[in-house]
Image 1 (cartoon, rainbow, N blue to C red):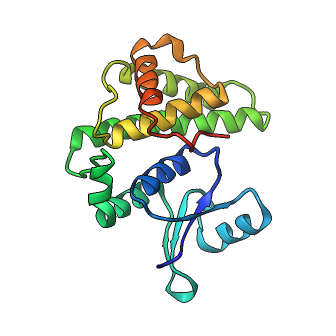
Image 2: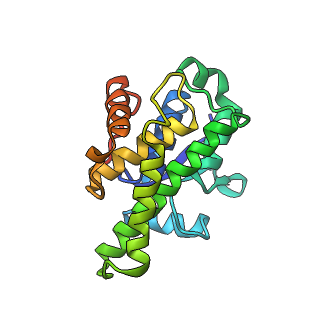
Length: 200
């Protein structure tokens, strides 16, 4: 069997999305932690952007490099669709409304991650940093009630579930302001869709 390595961390919501899908697809993989010296060096070697996740398929000169969670999800759907359908996922790229909701959820997540990193690095909560909070809150308010958790799970539900879990883990926003998102997160938890992949 072709070796499969997933470069990333257990705290990354984008890595978590891939871990959930790869597990559902019954694809054996090795998680290479990029917080360690060897993982960081490998990430630098294979990914010019230096961000996670990166999926490595094969070894040596024949290694295929997939350097983005959306690209990896598309690859998994292309190559493991029967297993993913059996696990109650529907990642049909033609479901445009689903993909649009995914973009909003991941836009909110990107802004939340950006703000979290900037504040942790000592940036003042003004200007650009404040606008990141406003983007997060605006996107979450828009998503509230528009996305409900369902099975089969599409891109929107998968991305929103991972985003909300990360936001709660990092305590970057008070999710109690949006009852629809609270209900979504409760249904996500009850479904156990991400059991064993919780951020930490």
